[in-house]
Image 1 (cartoon, one colour):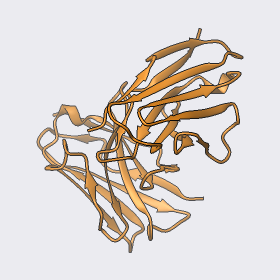
Image 2 (image 1 turned 135 degrees about the horizontal axis):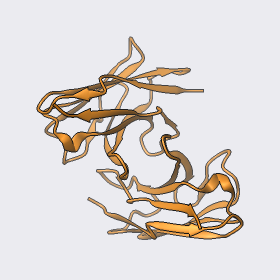
Image 3 (image 1 turned 90 degrees about the horizontal axis):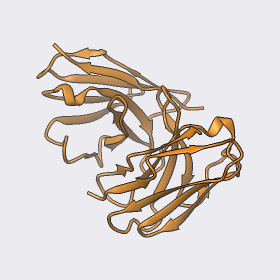
Length: 107
Length: 116
């Protein structure tokens, strides 16, 4: 199985901050990686696909980069609605695997 | 707009079978992959498996493969999850979703507790 390790696990931040979340894969997944946002009691929401492509309707303050084994999700000018958990997921191989998640919380 | 809704028992006894159904509305199960994912309370997401609408190309997480089955009922526009011989470790919120790689449409999730 491909392991995805996200850092940090918790990210205290303030509205207006720019934050970055890293996802490292135990082996290359090329660009077969997505990012999801999840709020408490809700289903995950697709933000970024193919490592760097913004999903329709997702604000442009979200961006993704990377390939191979290292990926970054950046949220510029954090908004109150962005305080949530974020997960990376690879679909390069089976089983599909998720990172353990990063919770962006109010500082 | 495709909508998905999970249904099934919220409480299952240890060693019994967990059975959930996902009803698809606003769209058809045809020509899509259908996925199940779970999330233990307070923890991260775990991919369970997916299947093509015609029952082909089913893939399951190796850790669950001996106990899990996903099926599609095109006549009812539904797909289902069965997980045998459950233990407390199977307690989780179970989500159904549409997609093979990108999961754009999800159900709201349903909590299944395994307890006697």
